[in-house]
Amino acid sequence: MLHHVASFRIRYHECDQQGHVFNAHYLALFDMTVTELWRAHLGGYGAMVAEGTDIVVAEAHVRYLGPAHFDEVMDVAVQVCEPGTTSMRTEYRVSRGEDLLATGWVRHVFVDAAAMTKRPIPDRIRAALRPG
Image: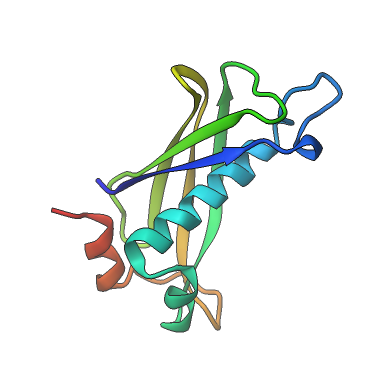
């Protein structure tokens, strides 16, 4: 399945009172990483929307395994799992060097960009999600 890795340096405002990356920011990291996957393999998110398709989050899950801190670089790996008829699930691994800090997944549903109603995954996107 299609995969991509993006690196992010943690900014001060992303940390909580304990000095760790605040838990909600992991979902933002997931979102930024899938956006980079789209840019690298599908011509960018805007190209998909211009073709009449958008995606919305239906479910999300994060499992926290260790803390990250200000100014550390985190690598976020995303892998697209087998796409369904109208949705796809992406799985994430967040690491700092060899340390696995979090895992998670997000299920996106494909929708008509104008009507915001569920639609099948377009053939062009489906083909790009399953390289090889």
